[in-house]
Amino acid sequence: QVQLMESGGGSVQAGGSLRLSCAISGDTRNRYCMAWFRQAPGKEREGVARIQTFDGTTVYTESVKGRFTISQDNAKNTLYLEMNSLKPDDTAIYYCAQYSGAYCSAGFQYRLYNYWGQGTQVTVSS
Image (cartoon, rainbow, N blue to C red; front, top):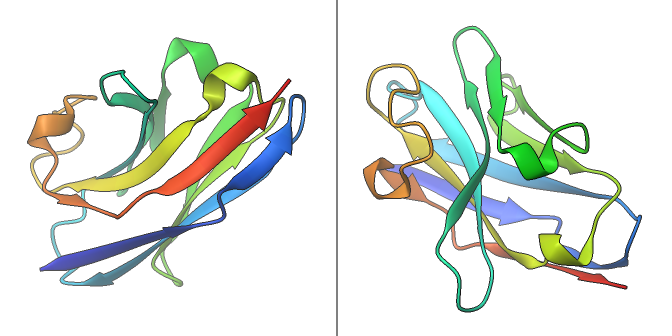
């Protein structure tokens, strides 16, 4: 089993920054792909960024490119999401997730991810 716990959410004004953290514990043997998703009220969960853990390859959804950075600290078993130039449209609950299949072949198909954190709220005001 894998446990994921997000932290770092909060309320900021547009243009501000936040850094989310995801503490990873438990069985880390099949940690091939980690991702950040978000879900705004009334909307479907969407992928924000993912990282292929063995080589660091990253992919971002178009709306966050150039503003968000996903990274990992394997020594600390922690996943990060650095968010800059935040916009009101970034308001959502942010989740970290682990896909235990081959590489990041699940893409941003959230139903295929095996483990999820409880989420952390990010609110951006205009």
